[in-house]
Structures are given as C-alpha cells and as structure tokens.
Amino acid sequence: MDRDIYVLQQIVVFVSWRMPNKKILPTALCCFLYTLVVAQPRTDVLLKDLLAGSNSVVLKQVLQHPDEYRPQIIYTQINRDKNNKPSFTNFNYNVDSLLYFNPASTVKLPLALLSLEKLRAMHIAGVNKYTPMQFDSGYNTLKPEYKDSTAETGLPSIAQFIRKAFLVSDNDAYNRMYEFVGQQTINRQLRSKGYGDARVIKHFYKMTEDQNRHTSPVRFIKPDGTTIYAQAAAYNTDSFDFSHTNLLGIWYYDSNDSLVHAPMNFTRHNNVSLHSYQQMLQSVMFPHSMPEKQRFKLTADDYRFLYQYLSQLPGETNYPKYDTAEFYDSYVKFFFMDSVNKKMPEGIRVFNKVGWAYGFLTDISYVVDFKHNIEYMLAATVYANSDGVLNDDKYDFETVAHPFMYAVGQAVHQYELQRKRSYKPDLSAFNIQYEKRVEDKRTVIKQVDN
Image (cartoon, rainbow, N blue to C red; front, top):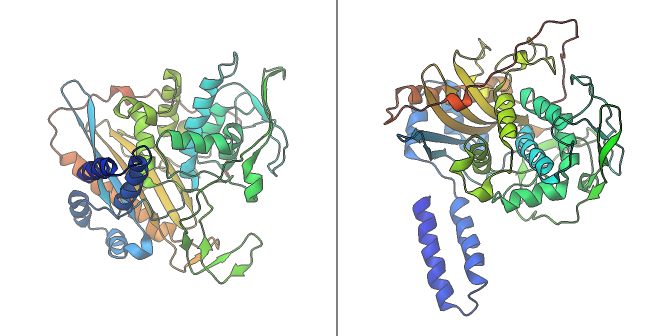
C-alpha cells in the first residue's frame, strides 16, 4: 500500500506540473487516484497463509465463499525497539473500503472519544465526564432522561454512558452521547481527523432522517440539581454523500414489520470502514504512533478511563451491576468467545469494541497477553445471514459468525505465541487496576437493549 501511494503521489506531481490549474488539480486527482487504489480488495500473503493453516471448518467455509460472508480482517503486528517504541504493520484479508458492513455498535467507540474530546474543549468549570447531566425532550422522539439507576449517583453522566457502551454495548448510552456531541460535530470531527469514510448519522432508535439531524437540550447539573451549563437543542444542516449505493439481502422487514420483496438499502445508514476503526483504536492505545491530526484530544485521565473500560469485564464492575451469567467474561470479546468455556484465558486482556446487527458481527481489538508477554491488534467483520432476509432476527451468529471470530482470534494468537521478536515489549502501561465486584443486595441487571 505504501508503494502504491508513493507512485500515485509522483503521478499527481507530474500531471499537476503539466496542467494550468495547479492549485486545484493535485488534491482532486490525488483523491480520485487514491480511491481507485484503496477501493480494491486487499489480501496479504502472510495473513492468507496464517488463516489457511486453521483447522476450523467454519473459518474455511467463510473464506471459501467471500461473496456470501463478506469477511474482512486486519491483523496488526506490533514490534518494539530497544526503547520500547512500537511500530505497526498491517496485514489484510479481503479489506475493501467499499465493501459495506453495518458497523452496528462499533460506532459507540468514536462517539465515546468525541464525547470526551468535546468535554475537554468546553473548558467549563465543574463539567467533566463524571458530572451529572440530564436530557430534556426536543424535536426528535427520544425520551427525556433525568435519572440513571445503574449509576452510583443515580444520575446520568458521560462516564456512565461510556461504561455501559463498552461493558455490554448498551444502546441508550450511544443515543445520549449522540445527543451530546450532535450529528454535525460527529461527522465534521471525524472527517477533520482523516476518517473520511466515516458517516455516523443515525440514533439507535426509530427516527426519520430529519429527526436524526436534531438533538435535544442537555444540562450539566450539580448534585442538588442546580444547572452548571445548558446546551441548547441543535440541528445539522450539512449534507452527506450518498452516491455509493449499498443493497443487501433478498428481502427485508420494514419498520412496520411488513415483508418487502427487495434488498434492504443501507446507503443512508451509519458507515465506517474496518481500516478507519483500526486507526481509531490505535490512536487511543498508542496516540504517539499516529499523526497528531488523527488523534483525539484527550486528557491523561481520559486515557486511563478508556483503557479500564475497554478491557474491564462485566463481572468486575459494580456500577452497573450486571448479571454475570448473562453478561459473562467474553460477552463482548469475540476473538476469545469459546462456545464451551466463556471465561477469558488467564493473563489476557482485550481492549476492544464490538458490534452486531443485520447479520454482521464485528470486533476491533488490541490484545495483550501478559502471561506470554505478547501484543497485537486484530479487527474483523463477517456477515452471517443464510436466508437472505434482513430484520427478521434470524441470523447465523451462533453457528457461523461467533465460531468464525473465535477461529480467527485463535489463529492469530497462536501465530503470535511463536513469532520471534527482537525486543520483548514492556506492557506495564496496560496493566490496569480493575474493580472488584462487591456483593450487596442490589438487583443485578439481566437485560439491556444492545
């Protein structure tokens, strides 16, 4: 990929020199040519051979039918120098920026990052991620929210929304962060950071396109209810590029539960490429490895908080207090979700965000194995919907998607265990002090909307 981009840059320089409008052409031509390159499915030999060595029947089935299952995988190898400075090499399998997958709950990752970034940029005394906040009713149909029974304070906050979004992928938490940041700011900020294929334009709540453009009034309050800061309702006037059509399936059920005999149109849905997700997570876990433009402007405490809740398990958490039978250790750790043993392997922590909807299952992870002193990143998505019908809640998650993810995770982890390194990594920066579940009389949470 680096060589391809270098060649394109040389073409741009030459052509722009020959053309009269030298101010406009280089940028336009570079964007056009770059799109031609990255739009092609990319597979690297190392990852292809690594996956081919797996004995998983499901993995082989998926890889043999890429048009049906739409798999994409990015394995990021991390190597440290003598000063523990990491370098990153991506190995791709069928990665294509134009091969649509529904991002589902993975969009909660950029929403959490943008929420923290916005809080820092506000510079309002007494307003931070732990400050209680309330949501009033507005133009859209999202209900007001004044209390949060899962929080220790009994009140909503950005910190609590992020906990719920990461621990069990709670949908209401996403909706509230969407309301706080706003559709316009979300997309302008992602574009400005270089994530040009990212489009986050929908609540996880039944709304029209117009309603999704609106956000409700938000207030940050003191414990006694006094308002510290009030954010007015907002409306996004920006336009979006819907020129690339994304149709999936053969039939689908519409919002009225009526069967429509046509493919479902995802053109105006949320969209983020797998490569952009990998870059976003890398910018969080290794901010100095990324150009400053691509980073999120966060505080040291923000990073500490993110590292904890990207990797903390539901059973280790007191607020919210989740039922550990329902929300087991590997509940949102797909690369280690063994169908038999749902415990995480000893010494392994996964800093990640997952999503599942419309038959798509996705995981973007940074994996640390403290027992064997290894680290790597792994991102993958797969589509498992054998009947071709969307919105029928009949997807092949248990028989195809989850076994596929587990097989990919095992193949890469086993390779990493035997891979030779020039320098052993110092992983102490990711050795987090996690919570310990306190037994009390509170009722555990057995069900969430995710």
